[in-house]
Amino acid sequence: MQFSLPEIRPKEWIHRIKEEFFPPRILDKYVFSEFVKIFIGALVTLGFLALMSSYSDIKGDMASSKGGKIHGWLFIIFRLPQMLIQYIMNIAILFSVSFTVGQFSANKELVAMMAAGISFRRIVTPIVAFSCVLWFAAFFLKQTVVAPLNARANEEHKMLKEGDQNTLVGVVYQKHFKGQEGFYYIYYYDTKEEEIKGGFNYICLTQEQTPDYLLVAQRAKFDYQKGVWVLKSVEETKFDDDLQVTSVQKFAEKEYTLPEKPDYFKKLKGSVEEMNFFELSEEKENRIRKGLSYGDVDIAKHTLFAEPLLIVVLTLVGCASGFFTKRMAIVSSLGVSIGVALLYMVMDPSFKSLGENEVIPIWLASWITPILFLSGLYVIYKRLKV
Image (cartoon, rainbow, N blue to C red; front, top):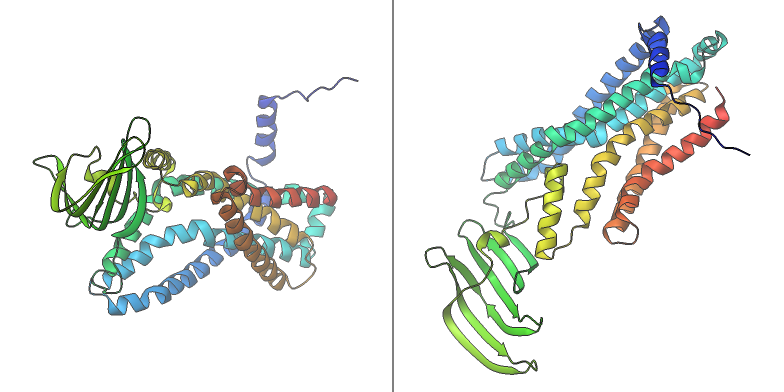
């Protein structure tokens, strides 16, 4: 028994596509125009609701802000593209597809189209093709527009919170860092005063990776002129080769020459939502060098590709749900949209959390949701046979 793959003829495929879709048929124009009207309406409505929700979330901060309310409005505006790509567009296309196809089915238009010898797959092809275009557009926009605007949104949020006594923005964090010759534990780095406060701990290792000495200080500031760290209220503990303490000394202030400079301890670049693919790769290398966790970075790299694919998945879900609609298309569409959206909102973060905690592989955590949806859709469309 011989197994052979079908011969691939790209020129023949291109010719068939050209003959079938160019110029567009009257049916294609009708189906697509009905879909686009609903899609644009859903985008506008959901966008308005998203703006109102964002305002509701930060109106308390705007009321008490000493930095100015304008930063609150700018935060909402800069955050809108992220909400548009990640949530609004997905829900809008699911609702509009299921409603449009559902209306055709409820009004028997779908039956008339199929009775004319046109398959269901051919009828919804213009909508599916449009969703594929949106898939690539969403990926491109996340790289070039959404990531930098997220960074701007976070900056505006910091300015909005400026002066809030209950919030210390962009400063406080507790981190372990792996240095060239040892390990640091830093309480927080004050970027305005360029000083480490609350605790500066450093253990220097020998070439045999055994402790050489330990520094525990309340504050640390780098002297750029001398090229040394000035530690205050410091306790210095030294060890011998047998890991026995040889001396413990305390100083009100003492200078130390350490391999790392202040830039090494500044906060991470920011949220992974602020980075494109190349910046995420650089951030991962940076965290590996400092001995920090990078699971969220790996998740974000895969999400850049996997998340936009959801647009196509939801389009296929909407087509299938619309096909089975008999009456009251809007009720059916709302039900499907809400149900699928809730299912996705539960599944996707759950799998990503498992990936970050190394329970399952990172790539699987990012791709498993669209894979499961596509697998289910494959079974459904296989049984439709239309």
